Image (cartoon, one colour):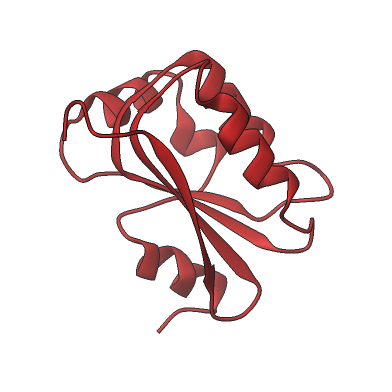
Length: 117
């Protein structure tokens, strides 16, 4: 996956949830894509950020992800790869599991919201 084109894909999910899938490397140059997609999501909509296809993430993107959860948007969760990838290690160092709900799959995240299969 190294060198894969970076992007943010938006998928509507059953119920009141949106899944943002980050692929490739994400840093200050790709942060505006994530910011724009988050800005387009209604505050009452749950946001699941899927990082399983993300190969690199820097502090600017981590800050954007953590900032996505606000008083007017309390339902933000993450899907992390099961392996010891760079992304998982980077987020573990800052204690993301204490800051946002973390799930092993999009299906598990949707189920936790009561909206999954």
